[in-house]
Length: 230
Image (cartoon, rainbow, N blue to C red):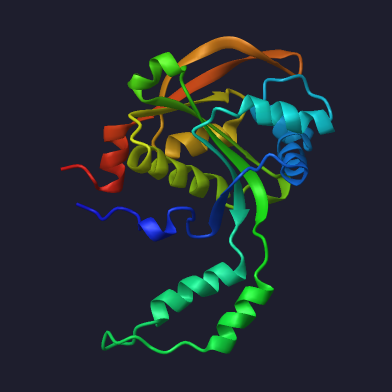
């Protein structure tokens, strides 16, 4: 059986780090910019009326996601964090003995470490509390315009699937995708999500009616993909 992801790097993937969305003005503004600042992005994954985001939008988004299992920013890992990972691999030499670290280098890192740049949001919503025993959750993701098409979305989704099934103990992760969002449809299918049905003509887009495609991934399907199945 394949090994589980390392626990000491549970909040990061190869190129990304994930941090909680705080209930402060700075994070609310970032939340609004990512989810409401780009009309194309809004139209692709948001059923709300298309309108510019405002200061109140941040409060609405915070309230909408307050009960989420997971509410995080998708961030680019800083060079400092990547260097830290390199240090972890270099702390032992070929003979297995630890190598000494330079204290000056450590002090320099502490002074120059920067806050990771948020490029997207990732949410995982539970069902109603009275249905929590079914262990289902709904996934939502948004990426800022300049960071689409670079593989960050699939990387973030793979990370949250591991977190959902391995750390949270879910049995099923579901999501909805507009039928005109061809890129997202291809992405979800490639990641192993199974199409389960459609809400027919449920979304109005550019004066045409479109379906919401319903996808889900089950725990045993994730286990098989990751090599965890017996």
